[in-house]
Amino acid sequence: MTLSNDDRKIIENSIRDIKDFPKEGIVFKDITTLLNDKKAYGILMQHLHDRYKSYNLDYIAGIDARGFIFGAALAQMLGLGFVPIRKKGKLPYTTISEKYALEYGVDEIEVHIDAFGEEKGAKVLIIDDLIATGGTANAAATLVNQTGAECVECCFIIGLTFLDGIEKLEEKTEVYSLIEVD
Ligand code: AMP
View 1 (tube, rainbow, N blue to C red):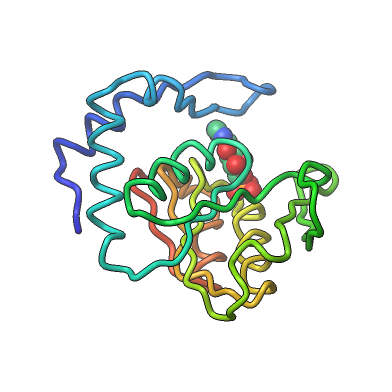
View 2: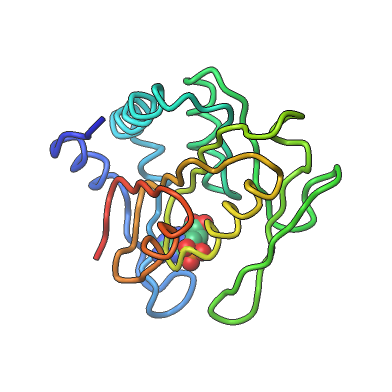
């Protein structure tokens, strides 16, 4: 299911660039302006629904925190359950966790051990707003697979192609990014 160039432009134009946030040299892709634009947000969610309705998915997993917004809406549209993959220390039940490297230091995300049901092999789509180095999404895919479920694809609204995050993640799973920024 492809997105027309006109629709892609509408989504792209609704995303705001904030220079030097959170620190100098970073161009932060602000998706709050996309969410605020009912036309762009509607086109985006309809496209994701059309793409994934034939995937036979069991769950949508969203990455903390902007992945929750798109993931929870998509899960509801597809009639599926939603699973939050959270930063360490936020989930109340038994979790498994995975560390990943940041530019300076490490971070850790986790998921509830029983999030994808009792039967093994649940098909899971992971979603986040943006892929940069791919560290977060790689850790998320590892976690999903460790629970006994299967990450069938990682979906991003924005992919930063000047980093090799997408290529690295493609060694582990399928990757789809709507808007590629170079
Ligand atoms: P990474 O693990 O390097 O792929 O970073 C991805 C995570 O960091 C995602 O959850 C993004 O929301 C966030 N992120 C990284 N770079 C940016 C950026 N330039 N603009 C907005 N969010 C970013």
